Length: 328
Ligand SMILES: *[C@@H]1O[C@H](CO)[C@@H](O)[C@H](O)[C@H]1NC(C)=O
Ligand SMILES: *[C@@H]1O[C@H](CO)[C@@H](O)[C@H](O)[C@H]1NC(C)=O
Image (tube, rainbow, N blue to C red):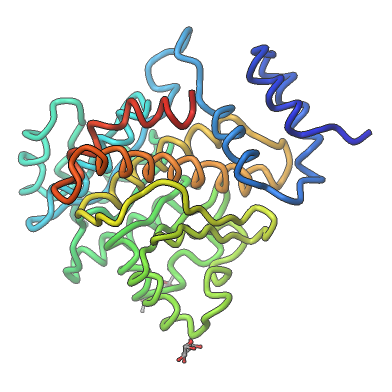
């Protein structure tokens, strides 16, 4: 029997069916899903958002942001605070010894560990073990030592089979050794390059058309820009998004995207959308769509108020209302 996807989703949301029933309807559709349009993506985005009632601390997500350096302290702060404000319970920042006190002083809401160096790798690995997801890259910088520690952390995440989001200078490190994330294990990795970072991959991989398939089935790519493009190993899960946003490109916007993706990806994986091997690919597609749509809404709303003077901090102030506008 062919079930109607939209009806089941809407029923699932509106009548607050038990999780088991809602899941069953999605499992049926996962094997036949062919066209994941924006309406379906948005409905699934709404579905993965956890209830607030009856949860214990940590259930809505423990996120780790690896980033920051002597030069950059804002980027990991924007990423981490976005994860938290969207609804993760606990957000940790692994950063350098000198960046840690600065990031702590921006916010008492974040847990900041000053362990980002090779000497403290065992300490970091044992902490990574407890995290739901790792976001690596915001404000890391490109020093040789930093690139080395980035590889070490990616290897540790691979061994621990942790879902991984790679952004900014983390992407730079990957472009210097493409094989570091080749065949990344489930529950997979997501790369979020802007145009310049995508170009670096296209050159390194020597392919204009299929560069995003280089890393295997469980690595997907959000190519950010005026239009956002999502690419994965399942073409029917790919999409393009142009709604929202503005022409303003203040520093820190990309960090808000990767931070919010940390929370949505955690939620999507916890929901276990399909109960089959496509579940993770669908979770990635839905989570990236939710994060991109949400970030573009924050940008649009902050731009409507501040215009050309809009900054990433102004976008943080729009998180609550943007979340409600998109998902509630
Ligand atoms: C790149 O990463 C792979 C996989 O982790 C590793 O085996 C290789 O030695 C690295 N190459 C360089 C040049 O660092
Ligand atoms: C990609 O496309 C551009 C423009 O068509 C071309 O100049 C370039 O050589 C291509 N690069 C690769 C790696 O195929």
